[in-house]
Image (spheres, rainbow, N blue to C red):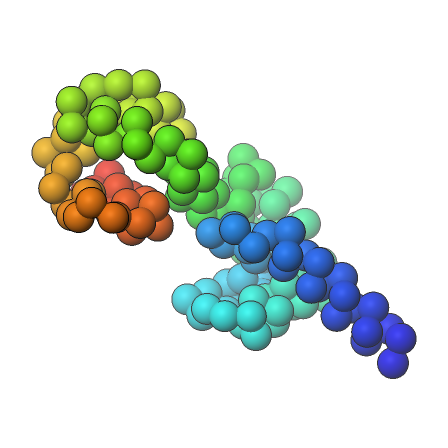
Length: 150
């Protein structure tokens, strides 16, 4: 009973520390098996599967199980974009409206894309990115990533 309670506390603390994370499970077999699911239960299953089989460490070092060969967790770029926009949303809106600026340069670097292409696509799609005055950073991040993938 003490082991189960201890595990629940450890997992609870892990989720509290990642409460603002866009993707809190990373890569590995568990993350692949539960991909597309949302909520606490699928995340617990994904993390438990990764921890039980130790496959996340192998995936990170070998570039398998949904992990990137450079040791970065898949989906990390979108998470970095979200974190950046969360702290720079106002300046990002200004730069997108102008079609140039430091936030666009930084995002181009994060995405490993040509700065001019990022600025041009974002500027062309300003109305789509900022479709109302109370737009949410999650929506802007998802729309921005969608535009950049096109």
